[in-house]
Length: 92
Image (cartoon, rainbow, N blue to C red; front, side, top):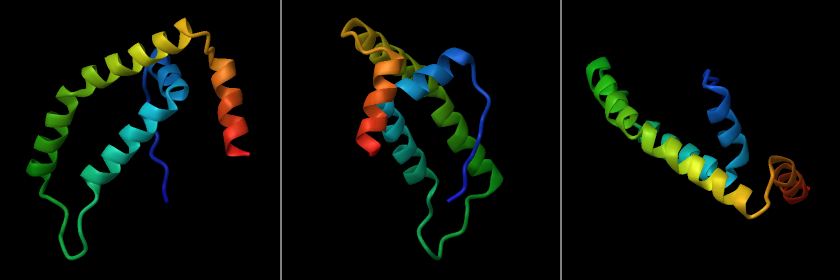
């Protein structure tokens, strides 16, 4: 598996780190949308660009959802440090 790295604003990066459930849903969505069945070629550039633009329209909604989850976690006393520790405990 290869890693893709993109540059984003600090707040978005922090939301990404703090919202594991949402992050996993987004990763699954991207994997599903960009995976082609065996025997099928990749779409041409125009189709790929149209697909990208369609999903780009939904990006603000996704970012707002991430912010909402982060705010809800903070209201419930889940700081970034606590969430990081929970994740570390879960992975062990």
